Image (cartoon, rainbow, N blue to C red; front, side, top):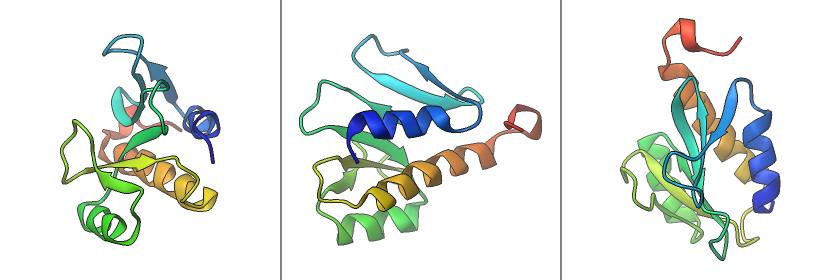
Length: 114
């Protein structure tokens, strides 16, 4: 999966929006006003920060070289996923959905997408 496909997946999720609160270089994907993914399209190789369950985050980092602690994020709850073609498309899709689902679950019911 390449970065444009990952961005398309982020935007296809219910209630997701793209914002640029840190300036035009960083694309931030939110649901209910909370961040679930960030990327800088100018990075090479492309990478995306994704929220992750802390225990799963550690296991993923141990298993995959292309998954590292979240760059400029709380390293307990965030991973940086390098989109260097070493990870399967299904894994990247799963990690994006996992991040989105964690954030949706933390939202008050009134802010959750239907």
